[in-house]
Structure formats: structure tokens, C-alpha cells
View 1 (tube, rainbow, N blue to C red):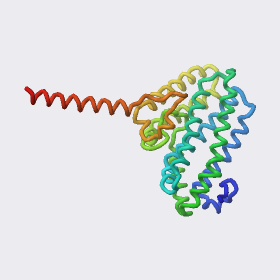
View 2 (cartoon, one colour; view 1 turned 60 degrees about the horizontal axis):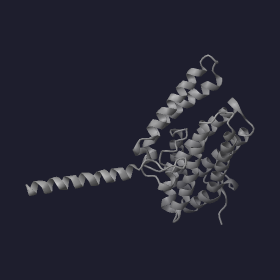
View 3 (tube, helix red, strand yellow; view 1 turned 180 degrees about the vertical axis):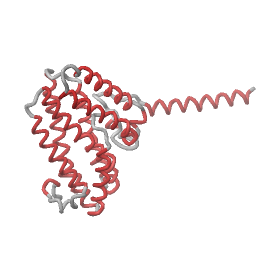
Length: 269
């Protein structure tokens, strides 16, 4: 029987440097932000959502880059456990992307927001009650502290926005980290400016934010950004992505057949 991370002290979780302590701290912050989100509209809601994005997406990126590979290595069913959470992360990315395309007055907005908070809450519960206690049972206190330092480093340089097309596993997410992190953090600065800037320059800031969003989308559509992912996390808004791997394999087969035909023709001639 495992004890939830939420019910353990800092010392029980491995000390202040432990990855479990850092995870628990972020989860407490997320709970507070989701409580703030309830009942908000307009600019107030946009400000809280921006803070949620800056917390949630670097947090999840660091999990997928640092923690999940360890769990897949040390737990017999680590692959299945982490895949379930990757699917939750994927749904969060898709919901946020949908939310960003909805106006404040859209009737869909409340439903999407409701589902987003539900999935985020499920993700926290799955991690604190199931995944992390099992990781805790398989690695040493020292290893938890090392993982905590690595996780923190990655979290601080990770993308801060939804990128549903990018792989949830290395090497795709690792390759995507630098360009998307730069674009996301620039967009964060611009969007914070939108909330506080004089009305005269707000349109220009909205235009800049949209341009950065389009640039991010162009980067995440590069085929390399999807490499390494599990096929079950590839479906974006109910549609499978373009089958790059199948196309590459078919092209290789055609090239080999063509080369063989050329050689056969030369021998015949």
C-alpha cells in the first residue's frame, strides 16, 4: 500500500531538493490558481490562464523529459503508467489550443474550461496517488534529489504554451524545447503587456502575439518534432497527423526498386 505524495512531509519525500517535493509544491500552486479561475471572465480570466500555462506546461515537459524515462526503466509497468499520463498531458494541450481559438462570449468556452480543470485535477491525483509513490519505492533518497535538480533545470527552460503536435517523448520533445521555449516566452511577455498596456498599442501587441503563435505552430509541424512519441498520443482534435514515417518508408522502397530496375536494365543491355 502506497501513501499519497499529498499526505507526506518534506522529509518523507526526500528533503527540499527531492523531485517529489518540487512536484507537490507545483500541484499546490495549481490548485490555488484553478480556484482563482472559477468565476472569472475577460482580462481577469486571461491573466489567470496565462499563469496556469506558465506553471503547467514547463512542469509537464520536465516530467516527460526527466521523470518518465526513469519510471519506464525502474517499474515493470512504467510504460503503461506514463503513457496514461502522457495522454492526459496531450488532452490538456488540445483543450488549451481549442480555448485559445474561442472568444470570451463563446458558448463552448465554459465547457472547454470545465474539461480542462477536470483533466488537470485527474492528472495531479494520478501522479500523487499512483505514479510518484511507486517511483519513491524504487529509487533512493539521493536519486530523488538528483532527479529534482535535473527536473528543475529542464522546467526553467521548457516551453510554456500548448503544443499538441509535438511528441510527448524524446527525441521529438527535446528537439522542440529550444525554439518553442524562446517563442513561448516572448509571447508570454507580449500577452502580459496586452493586459496592462494603453489601448492605443493593444492592437499591435495582439498582432505580435498572433505572429509568435503562428511561428510556434510552424515549428511544431516539422516532422522531427513528432519523433519518439507513442502512436496513441498522435491524434490531434480527432484527426491523425500526416504519416511521415509511412511516406519515408514508401519513398525508400520506391528508390530501392528503381535502383534495382536500372541495374537489371544495364545487365540486359
